[in-house]
Image (cartoon, rainbow, N blue to C red; front, top):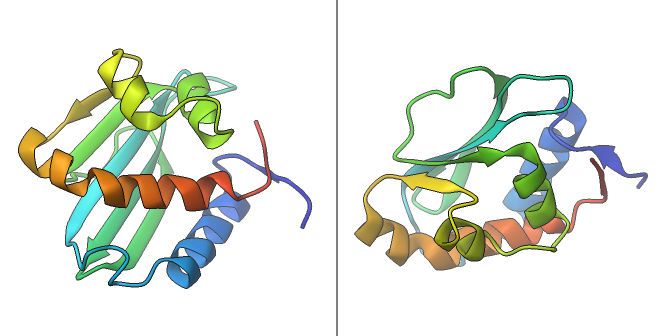
Amino acid sequence: MPPLLYLTEDWRAEAERKLKSELSPERMDRATTSLAHIHTDCPGGGTKYLLFRLQDGVLTELLLGQGEAPEAEFQIAGPYDVFARIARAELEAPNAILTGKLKLKGNMLKALKLAAIADRVNKVLIGIPSVF
């Protein structure tokens, strides 16, 4: 597969396909939650979001959009280049949050419980050949 341009509809479709095929409800701890990745300062300007919705450990929705993200239980926001570094496995998401490169909004106690799930999702996304 040729590399896909990050945060395009083709990339989103491949991310959804891989997440559904590689992460069983058991691997996702049968979690029910929603998470918005909010990318600011995107190439060409503006803000883009990826919205993940899980129901009983199943990815039910992966939305890509521009502007303000729909409501989600958790939001992780920061510059496009920080998310790109995570997607290239140059930076780990927890380190980006702890160092203030990304901002997390939501119930922090629940976020800590879901950290392993977020890590599994990120590892699948890192496996998508991407161009930034």
